[in-house]
Image 1 (cartoon, rainbow, N blue to C red):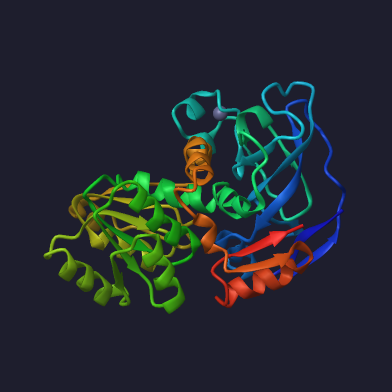
Image 2: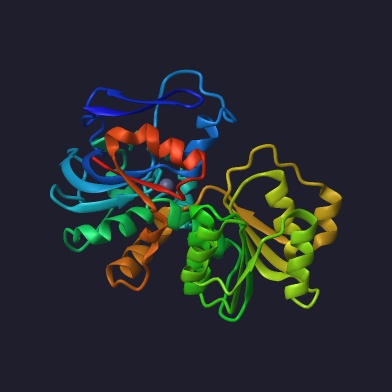
Length: 338
Ligand SMILES: [Zn+2]
C-alpha cells in the first residue's frame, strides 16, 4: 500500500510502505474510510518539532474492521469503528478513571494517513457504530477520533456548565469544535477569538455568540469589557503557544477554569502570576476514548454536524497538498479519502 511519510519540514510524500498486519493477538486491522490532517501534524511539518527519520503520519481514523487478532472479543470484522490516537486497554486504573490517553499500556496510533491501519488493544480502543453509516455521516464520525474529542475535552476540562460564559482561544478546527462542545454543554455566552472571516462564520454556526478580533493585551481588555470586568468562567486554550496560554489564563475569572489542549511548544508559566490568578488549570492529551460513545451518538442522531470543519476534501494520494493548504491556512482542516 501507499501512505503518507514526513521526511523533513515541508516534505510529505505518499509512498510505498509495508501493509500492516496483525502483530499482537489484541490488534485489529481496519480499512480506512476517511482520515485527515491534524493541527498537531503541522508542528513537525513546520520544523518546530524535530523529525529524525522519515516518519509515517496520521492519527485520526475511522473505517471497517478487516481482521482481528485471536484475543479480540468485542470488535468484529465488518464493523465500522472509530478510535483515538492513543490505543488504550480501557481497563487499567487510569482508563477506569477516564484518562485513557494516560493508559498504562497506551500505544500511539500514528500511521493513519494510509488505506490500511493496525490498531493495538482493539477491544479497549475501538468503538463500533450500530451499523455501517451512510457516507454523509463519515466526516462527522471521523472528527470524534481526535479533533471533536479534543475540543470536547477542552470544554469539559474548563468545567463548562449550563449558563456559563466561555472564551475559546484558537480558531483552528479544535477551537471551532470547542465552540460546538461548549454550546452542547449549555454555555450561555461563547466568545470566540478569531481574526479570520471564514472561521468566524463557522464559529457562529457552531454556537459562538461573540467574536473578538483582538489578541494579547487588547484581547484581554475586550474579554474584560464583554464580561463586566470579571473574566470568563471557562476558557478553552486550543493553540499551545506562550501567547495563547497567557491569554487564556488572563481571560479567566478568579475561580474559573482553563481547559488546555493545544500541544505546548515553549510554554512556561510564571508561578507567582499563576498563584495570584486563582485559576484552575486542567488539560493534556484528550482522553478521547471516554467521550467516543457520547460523541458518536450525537453524530448518529444528527444533533451535531462537526464534519463542517472540513473545508477541503482530497484523495489520500494528494496528502502533500492537504498539508500545504493547512500550513498556509487556506484550509481549516483537510479530509482525505483513500
Ligand atoms: Zn488503560
